[in-house]
Image (cartoon, rainbow, N blue to C red; front, top):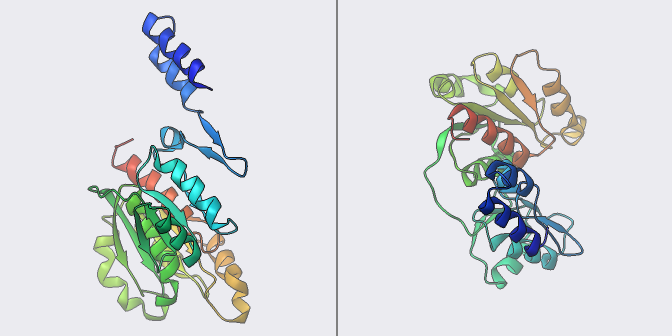
Length: 252
């Protein structure tokens, strides 16, 4: 929809021939800015509550900058995930305000601090899982959620997890990140009455098959209320947790 069509729609609303809710329904799917190599979704925040994130892997630094710059014209807290040093340097060189989270391999462009709602707990099995866990935590915070972290609480030493059960039961949703045998989400799911989002990581020795062993273990969890995202997909877990947390907090 171009500017003229938008103007016509708004004039129709002003005349009373189109109801505001009807106009909103038409605008929810628009607009898309065609950069030739990317079709930037500028209204995703209308549909999902958060702007489009940029997955940097496989894109050139120049492409990432162009997409992010366009998003930054109308959004704050733009997420650039899987950001390598060359991408980070390019974003900074373009004059964009950046908050770099090196461990999460993530950049928040035009960061805007706000008081988070509800509570999302991010729990990791081991220190080696921290990059994925941090991607989930930083993403959830940028989306407007209150996040608490609980790291290195895997099944090799469950006594590290038990003292925190009360806090886990206060969360609206829990993200459980684990590699190796991937047992942590099942353990948590069996101890709390909260939805658990399981994130398998690629951490482990040969027979872990780059996270496939953890993924299959989580998919076969006998604990009720456990859902599973893809291997190393901290962003996806945070996006799902964001929706659950905000519904539970009644802010959508």
